[in-house]
Image (cartoon, rainbow, N blue to C red; front, side, top):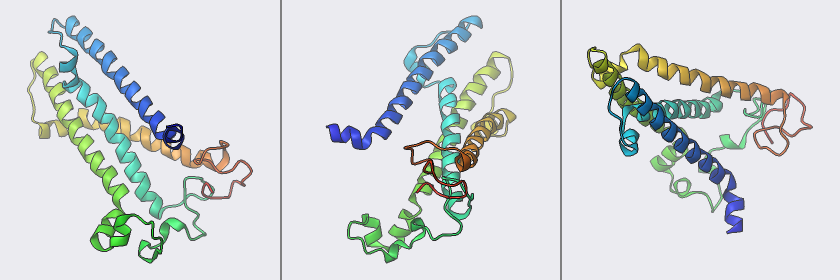
Length: 220
């Protein structure tokens, strides 16, 4: 058990932080939603009902959408683009192991798709990007569905016209919510790429070794 936590501590702690934050968002969102309902003479909802409401679904998935878009874009862009001196980039002047053709690998412990080859391998060698963009599309859709529900509730409260999910996608509100999250994600990744040229964190694989020159590219 000790080895399990040592070998998986990073993912365990990150997901614990995720669930703690999601729980905090759901509880405080529930309280805020019912306070707003009371202020507008609306009906309060139960906690389970709130978790299915557009208010909660929209808030969760508009953030997930931007995260998966950022990660998927970053993974695919690092295949072709470089930043000299950054720990987050491949070295433009060297051959990298990640660029090796898996069809030439002679490792008997290679994953099953590598040994199988063909279409299975083609999908597998792009599986990280594919999965991240599929998660982005799923989050994008759920953001639209949750936002559509919340938007229509507000429209009915103010005597306005309701819209379909496609109609909501055409509103400036939907794209404002998306762009305000997307810009922050791309900015933070861009900052990490550039800051890692000059700054260090001893012990982190996201940083170059402390004694490495600024021009050294990659974390190794």
